[in-house]
Amino acid sequence: MPTSTELPLNSAQSIASDGNTALDELSQLKRQLLQAEVRLARARATAAGAEADVKVLTARLRAVIR
Image 1: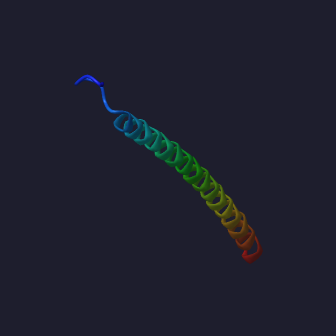
Image 2 (image 1 turned 60 degrees about the horizontal axis):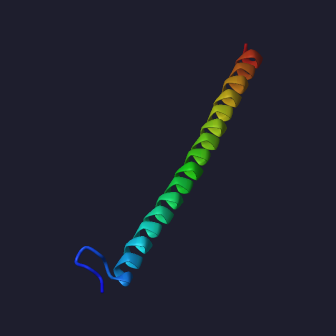
Image 3 (image 1 turned 60 degrees about the vertical axis):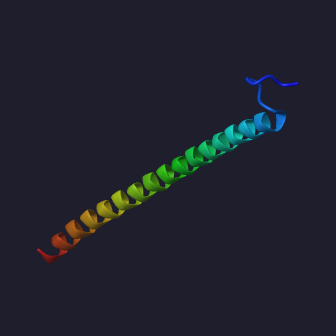
């Protein structure tokens, strides 16, 4: 018989299951955050490349106009 300080098996399993669920969710959130950071870095690189293109093309246009 379980004492008053022991949990029934189904309660212990429930707690372990909740812990695993929380760890799974945490792992999933970390992975999603990493993916979002990668997307942001790519977007910033694309924007920086576009800004460089605009500067070069503007300089070429000014050179042709003068």
